[in-house]
Length: 94
Image (cartoon, rainbow, N blue to C red):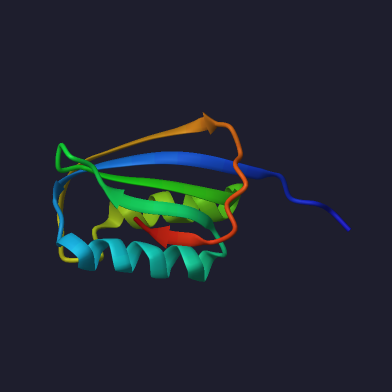
């Protein structure tokens, strides 16, 4: 049985987002993909997502963020993959 390695990405989204609705949609998508981590609004208006799981699933999450399927006007999506893996047990809205 092949064990999949875990990766953690930090994603920062800037734009006109639909408040709590965007965070809830993000949580639902992450849970569908089997990811753990969190989503939250930052004081500067951006949204931060930490998504951890199989690399292909994290890639799907990043793609979802860039597609704008969620009634938002996204100006930029920045991300990093070199984040250390953490002990998250689920995906939460903070």
